[in-house]
Length: 123
Image (cartoon, rainbow, N blue to C red):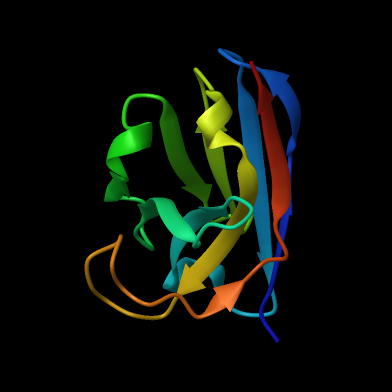
């Protein structure tokens, strides 16, 4: 089965940076579009960033544009989310997800999910 495992979450001060990483195993990683989602307590899960299977296309939700960067290394079966200029409103559990669909990166379905890693940004 496909397994996604996130790492890199933690507690940082506002304005700081974190780098999240996700490792995929169990299937051919390069065939998936990959996304990062986040969910704050009491809120719905929303997509933050996504990257196409080849890495040639990326997209971001408006609130993180210019601050977050998604990347992938298919040789290592990993996808990363570099988060700079963190704000308290970025506090959430961040999830890595994989999509077998072919569509718009931020609106297509995602089929496989990690368990999440907690990011807490203090003011």
